[in-house]
Structures are given as C-alpha cells and as structure tokens.
Image 1: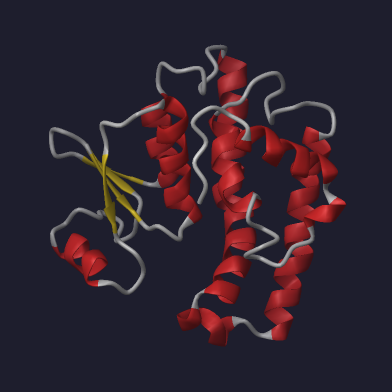
Image 2 (image 1 turned 180 degrees about the vertical axis):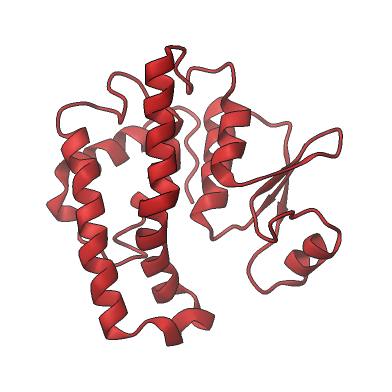
Length: 200
C-alpha cells in the first residue's frame, strides 16, 4: 500500500500516527506537501480523488481518501475500534465532530498562522473569532477528559487518534493556550507515552 501524505498536515499525521502505533511497516509513504511538484504529479495521476491528501492507495489500486475513513480501514480488527455497537457509534460521533467542528477551527487557525500563502486571510477579526470558538471546542474535550483517560473512557480509540492530531499542536501552531486545559494536557501526554508513538 502507498500513503500519499502531506508532512505538515494534521489530517495526514493521523494516519501516520496510527500506522506507527500499530507497528505497521508495510505502507510506503509518498510526501505531497503544499505547492510542490509531487502534489501536482499525484493529482495529475488521479491518485487524489478529492484532490487532497491523505489518500491510501490499496494494493488492488483502490484509492481511499479522507483521513478518518482511512483510520477506520486501518483500525478494523484492532483494539482502536470498540466492538460494542454503542461504543463504536460514540467513537464515530467524536470523529464526525472532529471534521465537522474541531478541524475547521483549530486547524484553520494554525494554517493561517503557519502557511505563508494563507497569511492574507489572517485578519484580526477572523483570528479572534477562531480563537474564541476554538476555546469553546477545546472546553468540550476538556469536560469529557476531566473524568476519564480517553475520549471513550477506559481505552484509547480512533477518536483519540483523530483528535490528537490538531489538538496537540493547538498551542504551538494555532496560538491557543493549553495551560487552561489540564485534562487535555494530561491526555496529550498519555498519547505521547504509547509504544510506537511518532511525532508530527
């Protein structure tokens, strides 16, 4: 299998992190960073169905896009996906929320601060709005993690993997103050302590 991965992207990092935690070494990485010939080549070859990374190219040639869909594929049959139907649905709820709410705020603020080609979009009003909304979203995670180690309770799941990607760098890249979220900071440390952990 081949993973088309954008090195600086949290969405691509989710997949690399899961592969590392699973000890998978059977996937070839192809870096396709923003505004590089490699990205243009991958698009032209039809390897990026939605025109963005990550995409997992399966051995039969099937191109599987979208980070959280790839996580579900790779996580099938592992302890990262709960067997109980309700717990699995709760995991998916966090993953849907991550893409529908969290990523569009936390990741966007980081992108506006870190990518030169998006700097013009980082108006004071927009950055303030993203900061306020991002803190509200982080508080939702904080409230859940205040009483349990993982988003689903007793064990790590794909929900933790997908939300870790942009949350752990929310301060360094997004400018959020994680000092006010002690439960999140403890959770970040627990993910980083897992065997096989790989940093962004």
